[in-house]
Length: 266
Image 1: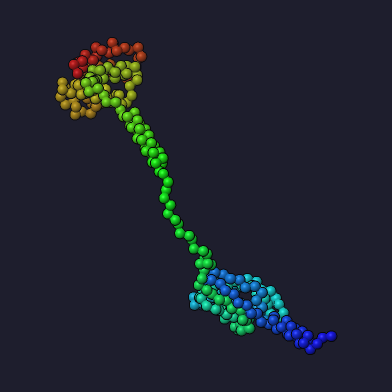
Image 2: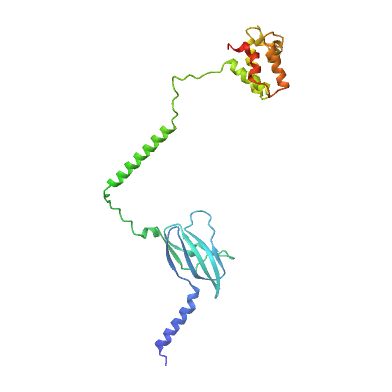
């Protein structure tokens, strides 16, 4: 048997079940600038959407994640960012998609705080100063390493330093006669290159320019041509021209020595 009290309780429970879907009341708290998520927010009527921001004065930024049909309305999953501290109603930032009318039957609020989650962490402990132990071994190691490094550096410098030449030893310079011996012999053997040929012509002209005035101002070809008719210079000049066209490996230094008699004093 149901008493009047039982019947009254059943009626109240049934009323609450009927009314609950019509209104959605939920409150959350979140730090400023960090996202928070609302799930299954029920809003009766047509679909809703966030009111677009026209400037930077909006206190909340709402993003609809999912829309699920429900009895005479829809349930929404939303992600909300708070930009201003305080308690804010989500209804102020939502409107119906088709009619563009503001949402009024939504009591969900979000409290934005200025306390960041990192502020709730325990403060780091202050470091305690500790006196280091005996550093004598460390210092000894550093001194030994530095000494070894200096020894190695000195050895490298001494090893790579060139030995000074004997001050009493004079550097002997080849005479013109000796240079001509090598160049004329190379000519006879056909081993004279262009650089050596220029050196040979320069030595011959340089020797005879005192005996033949104006020889040093003439072009090389004209100077050599003039020496062909000189009684003392012509034997060597003509022989060199012959060897340039017909060299012979059988020519010895003894054979060219008579041609260099005029250069022995130089």
